[in-house]
Length: 94
Image (cartoon, rainbow, N blue to C red; front, top):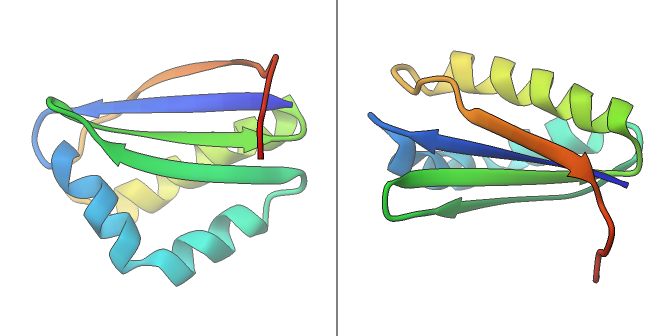
């Protein structure tokens, strides 16, 4: 499995989890269209927010980065690009 974490800061970053929740059905469909999708989460932090996607493969994780970027550009004007961290999953509990 492969995980991608996107850290958002600055203007509108704290709003992102709420906006994702408002568009839950659309976001759900977006991620479930990715082959090998496992899970997605969004959280607010003191300085902004972060999201995390887990997929069965790196290709799925890469696709999630592109689809997330496109969704954010379309739906969250003024939100800057995130810092992206990714890597192989060594442990995952469901």
